[in-house]
Image: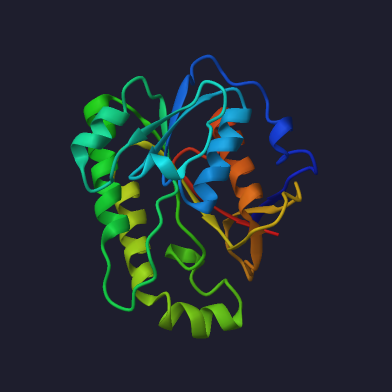
Length: 232
């Protein structure tokens, strides 16, 4: 097992180091979702300008200083290409509605994002998936692994697996972030970052701590072309 535990201050939004001048603007996809909103806030508080992509910009409130909102859809590649202007990195917090039938939004949308990044010369991608994708399957606890994932989340996670493969095959400078079960709670500032499983169980983590981790990863670039799993 490879795991690290952050210091209590590591994930507090105000404690994120000043942004590198090389990272001027980050595009956040899925910015209107509950995790995406916090990622926008965390990245903005780090000193990086943020562009939030949303199908309905009216759902987003005031943006951090230097931030802006653009209308776009991951299934509309032209809108993605427009959103990439003067962008140095992309964070995808793309979500999908719970469906009890096959879905393709996550994988198809991610293919479009990657195509737009290539067209625009954007190399850095941070993609949020979740526990149960890839080699994290079987590490979410008994109820999650045996009941919830094979039934309610079966089709969504089949598409998350395809989504992760698309990212792996992209040739970009990517990081996949798999949170444990997300909860709406303040950031604790202390959590585990797991890169290799050995009897680990991923229980919960707050959306705020995930957002804080992503802001730091954009600045520090510790996990290029790696998959990390976040849990308390």
